Length: 143
Length: 429
Image (cartoon, rainbow over all chains, first blue to last red; front, side):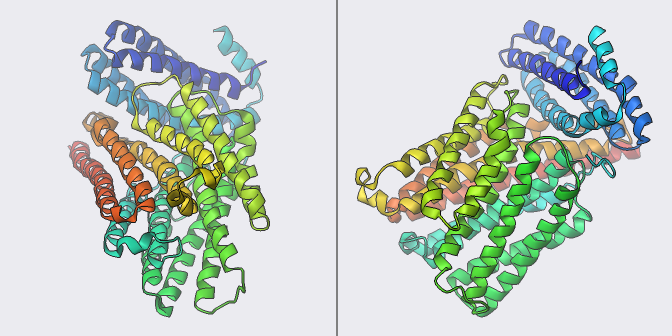
């Protein structure tokens, strides 16, 4: 059985790898490869955000009664990252290398400080407070 | 884990960390003038009054200044909470640190009881209040990871540096007597400052930021779990057994450097980046320092061996501690500007379109120039320690490098305020 921190952290790393491959391709102006990798990244990211916002966060809020705390901030940061993903979509469509690399650096730092908060605090807190964590992760793995 | 009071969003207002960052290069610019007006005499030994003023300008005025600002920012990310009453604490700690450091530097050059007492009071108040404000957070709130343990150790080291420094200063004005222990306490004060407060914080930060920002594997568990605490314990033992322990402290830095290079070499994100080059420079420096430290003096030129301690300290400070701090600033400055502006768009999300990305806040090429300037200045620093007549060139290069850093900071801040005006007009529409 996989725990919430293990599974969700491994998903962060998978997203990081796809992100890096897309960025490396854009840096070499290999736009078709960049687009393929970027779309895979965006798909994974959307799925990951969905799993958190629709299932894990509500479970945590229910278990702890904390609705205006960490999960609210995480939701807000998801929104901010979605806006950056949109900007990156546009830079990719325009094949604007400098714009793409500037935005990807921004999303990278934004994403990592967000991940740090989740991995170091929120996921361990979820493991402690959400009773059926491993079953939820088993469902994520099956989906 | 204590989850009460966690907010995840306790970012201190941007002017608080920037206050520390903007002041730091000004201290090195001041040091550049000190070098220029002190002439060759400054380089005769580490005990020269102007040399003591210079080292404290670098360590308190630059290193501690930036690290105090950066920790304010890091705490909410790694600990989930910020300090209580951040504005009050920062106004107090920043202003007293600036005045205290200036008084201390002046006291080394023109010793006087008034200056010594002033520096003692201001520095004890500044670092003491900062220490307790952070300790309150670090003790109460726990997060996962080895970094937080390193932060606690680094803060403890800062407290020990302060106690030793305050003791030495008190002794110089006759408040206390430390018969025959002056040199030992001074050595430990320097060792705890550089290898404790400075290095422990950098090592702990590296465990977190290198794997994350450069998509690299984690540091070996043995290193991230045990290296910071081993270093701290060795620093304590160094009070009693310096001859035996200092070589082990040097070796431990070599081990850290090798693991740092290994992790960096395995990174997946390989786009050109000045921050990673600063980290690589730091790691290579620590390996070079190991070779230099363990080379018997008979294989070194007499000019070099005479100044060995000073050379090792200067290289450690300049090519390791300051190098990493500058590399980190290249990431922190644009990110803080960006993220604070993003927070302002929460009322009107469409205003986000006017926020420039990180490279607009800090041009990548400009970061590269800072790196090259740093290498040049560092090499001339090494040369000046052996051939003091080159002091004017060092002074000039320090002036250029740190004016450039200051310019980059002011440029980022300017763009921040210009964008803020645009966002406000968007929100008011």
